[in-house]
Image (cartoon, rainbow, N blue to C red; front, side, top):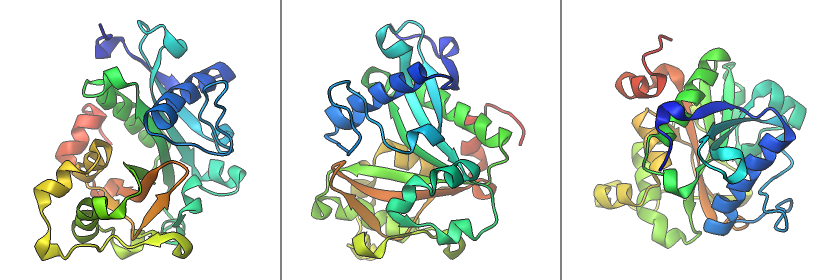
Length: 257
């Protein structure tokens, strides 16, 4: 049995043990389940980690009834501008030119490494994690959220419908339009808009990306093929001032802005 959502604990990582529990869940999801890898991944200890981890806040969703990994069943990685300055850059800058966002003068938050343990998917757990994110955004007066989200696999032909759908229907406005770095730029304009099968495209789009789109999120221009993680990445951008109010209420549990 899962804990009822009211029994979940939601907090930021406070210790090295907390961080290791998050990295262990990430290893199970991103490495064992999805086939990812990276230069700092510790296969012997079962930890998915990178050089940015020490600079991020790590939002943890904990089920006290779960014995494994300190009960951590969901994680989100959060990086504000002041933290990115300490890290030297945002994680996404390895894949995307963020000049438009950084020149906007608005308070930015980078999101990443969002995942849930398999048996909690499709439950209230993700909603609970998102509500914790909404509280964090309010606490720090964040105006624009962004981060890389992934399609599993690197076969562009297989992903052309959903990528083209994102390009034609959800491209960020120019003032928020990040762009995949030229050296790795993969066009998403792969199918003419008139020829798109919208239903097929949406079925192939990961649920996390669809959740951002429902909130009023956009995508940057171009995709990035991450061979190490066996993913095709897009950069999602969400302007809190343009969020869908009806959808946003689901994640902020009635709290006033």
